Length: 308
Image (cartoon, rainbow, N blue to C red; front, side, top):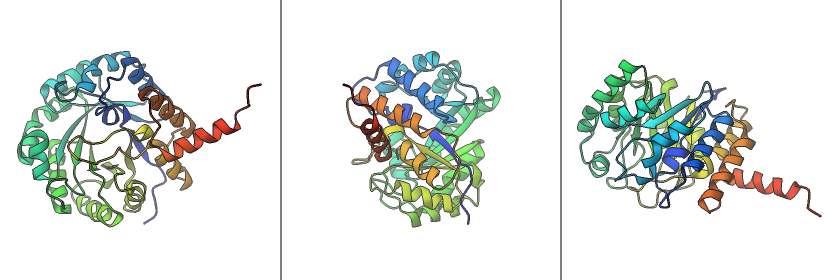
């Protein structure tokens, strides 16, 4: 199969990337990060999470961030909203899209959100209904689609079962996530071939973590399978508090560099994404986890005129 000519990138750094930071990130830095990413041409920015601040304190300022960002026409600003309280907060914050999340692993579901997969889907019915009534886009995310830290192997059929459940809720798009970064190209192809029987391939996305250094090759395998939507996190921010050893999402800079090399159009300005990655890394007081971003930034510095 030939590769897609266009790819949509969903930037998850401001939400999935920052949510596990132990030190509070200033609202102003979060706002600037979202604005830089939107200005770079990213068409969908996951900017907020309306969950209990008891569980995710870093996201307690989501309403303020959504209020302060200068919205760019054509950009979708997404927010995690796992229940009606979260949905109402997302609606008040003018989120363009709300995200619900489940797991392909029964054990992970129990340990992460304290209920079965079936019960988690039932909890989302009111959110899905409200999203339709208010004309808000609904996206579903399925964690542990390629492996679970507790049960180990996750079968493609298990992922397909959750895809069908989210399809029936009315999801406009469904993320297939490698939460702990154990996927390899063979697993990637097997899962997408299976789930695409029940849901349009053009509405399925890839969300890959780079724990075992496989994220970029997994993206290539998904491209070969016909996937044309991918999630990435600027500077490689993120992780999973429920998966020991899991590193951040694949870096946006690295993904754009790969796609540009393949001649695939994204509409994203790589230089501006590099700037955004360097900015947030400086705010966090550490080096970015993007190899392409750091290489480009170092090359710029080497070529910059020396001060006399």
